[in-house]
Image (cartoon, rainbow, N blue to C red; front, side, top):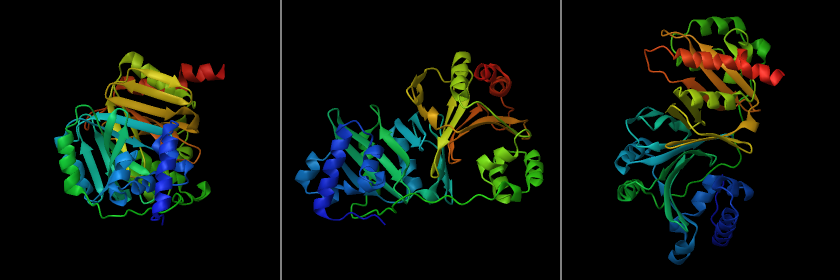
Length: 368
C-alpha cells in the first residue's frame, strides 16, 4: 500500500508536482514522473494535511469523498452542465452535458442522459476527491474517482455554466475530510489467457451465431474463458475481419463528411463512456487523432493501435457491426458503432461504411 505521511516529504512532493505541471505535463504524467499514481498525488494534496497558509498557495487542494458513488453522481444533476471525462492509456473521451437517470443494480451502474451516457463498474471504484486546482484563470473544480491502484476511472469537471453553489453543497454532503485514501502500488496483473488450441472454437462460433442481443457477448466470453481480442482472432473470417490499423482515421473522416451518426465507446475497468451522434471536426496532431466538436472531444493515440477489427454480432433486430481497436497488450482502446436504438436495426449506411474498411478503398490504398 502507498501511504505518504511524512510532512517534509509531502511538502517536497507537492512542490515537485507543481513544478512538473508548470512544465506542461498533465497531472497523470506528472505523477508518473514522481513514480506515484495520480490517486497518490491527489491524496497528498488533501487540505486537512496542510497548514492553511500552505493550502492557500498549493497548486491543488483536495477533499476526500465518501463511497456513496450512486447518490453522489445522482446529485450532479442539480449542478447543470459539466464535462465527463473517461480515459484509458490510449484514448480520452470527453462529453459535456448533465448527469441524468443515474441508477445502479448492485455494483453495476448507469447514467442514461442524452449527452452523458455511462456504464459504471463500481467494484473498481476505490476513492474519490473534490479537487480544486488554483490557476491563473481562477479555481478549477472537479470530482475525480480512482481505482485501488490510483488510476483514474472517471472525472467530472466544472464548466462555465456549472452551478458551483450546487456543486459545493453536493461535495459537503459527501465530504470525508478525515479519510486517508490508500492505494496499492503498480498495476494489477492481467489474468493469463488460455492457449488458443484449448478453447472450444466450434462451440464459441455456434454460441456467437445464436446470440439475439449484443449484451449476451459478455456471458459468452465468460462461458468459453476467452477474452475479447482472443475471441476475435479465433473467429476471424467467420464473425470478424481485420481492418488496416489506420482505418479509424478514415472512418471518422467519412462519418464527418457524410453526417452519419455514430456511437463512440471508450473507457476502462471502472467506467465506459459513450458518445452518440454525428462527428464534425477531425484533426490529426502528431500521434493524436482528435474529434474536436462542441460537447464532444476524443483524443486517440493512433500509434497505440495494434489490432483493428470489423465485428458482426447477430441480434433479433439484425446484425450489429462494430469497429474495435486494441493495443499491444490486447486491451480495448475504443469501439465504434452506428447510432442504434433498442428494437431498431442498425443503419445500413453505417454497415456499408464499416465494411469498406475491409473491402473498400482503404485496403486498396494501403496495399498500393
